[in-house]
Length: 120
Image (cartoon, rainbow, N blue to C red; front, side, top):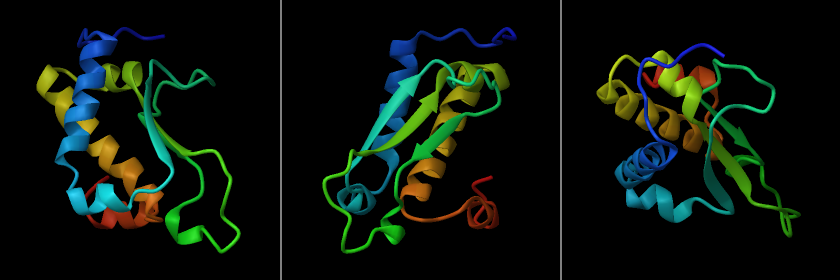
């Protein structure tokens, strides 16, 4: 794995993810359903360019038969994020963008639409 320009403990990174969640409008957080947000150091497949991942069934795809399933999972990856950032401020910004990006997937917004909205 490549080196990281910004050194940051997992605990501090998790705090940044929490702060990013605090910035999400309360109205959106209230309607998020059956989803958990976790921090991992890196994707299991070893890729180093994936910053976040949404796994589950978007709210827009849930039908009458959606019940009894494990929570959707949003994972924010620490090391790939640190690898692309030059400063702690960059990390704060990138974490916020990644959190919003993955939450948007929970609401059924795809990458194309996110790019159109400026959340590249």
